[in-house]
Image 1: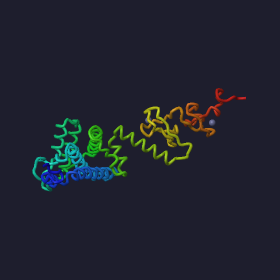
Image 2 (image 1 turned 135 degrees about the vertical axis):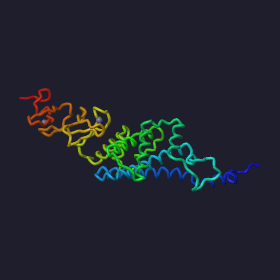
Image 3 (image 1 turned 60 degrees about the horizontal axis):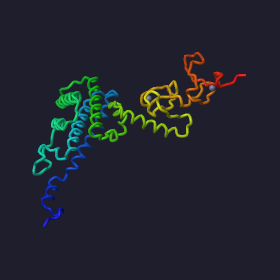
Image 4 (image 1 turned 180 degrees about the vertical axis):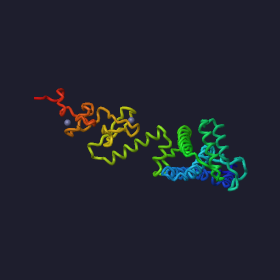
Length: 290
Ligand SMILES: [Zn+2]
Ligand SMILES: [Zn+2]
């Protein structure tokens, strides 16, 4: 007679031996995100003038990258976090893999870890060791540039391979900095669209606030911006010439007209361009002069 699965002792023993396999996976990722948040906080502090804090940024960032690389390995199988996944039992004493093993595994799996990313990782590891042994001097511009490259490379790798969407997990206080450091097309666009949405919400009911498609990058990220000379700015690419269909106000009479009907010129000869509507410039195509 076949034993029902729930009464199969060998099966239940197997699971009792490894009760935390899912928790382990979660801990890795949660800890990785904590370290990333810490690294960003320290980066901010360092940029604000307290350059000694780069030391802690480097330590947290190394920790983050180490944990997240191991996390990628566990996506193949949670047991692969252990040096010996074939062991009879697992407990707190079981040895887990190191960062080099994680990198080897990902490469063996055929994942693309670009050479530049790897050499930056090794550079970071060396710097971290020097910091831990109090034998370090930091070339600040080099540290800043490498931190930026590492975050960029990490985000690109993640987008291709796992899409953990860490930008959604990053502390909201550090989101802008993360996106800036990542300098990634998709993240920048996501941020620009989120900024458009929040501005639209803020300016709800204000007829002067307009959103349109940017003629340069072709995203719906062109918004009214009083600080721009043209009155518009693309939140994604920074382009300032508005598309034809958006309305702008005449610099003389203040009435709104579609942009393509306006003349943008230095009307008063004061080295200051303004929009001038067809009526104010007495354009015969629009206005019949007596
Ligand atoms: Zn644009
Ligand atoms: Zn006018």
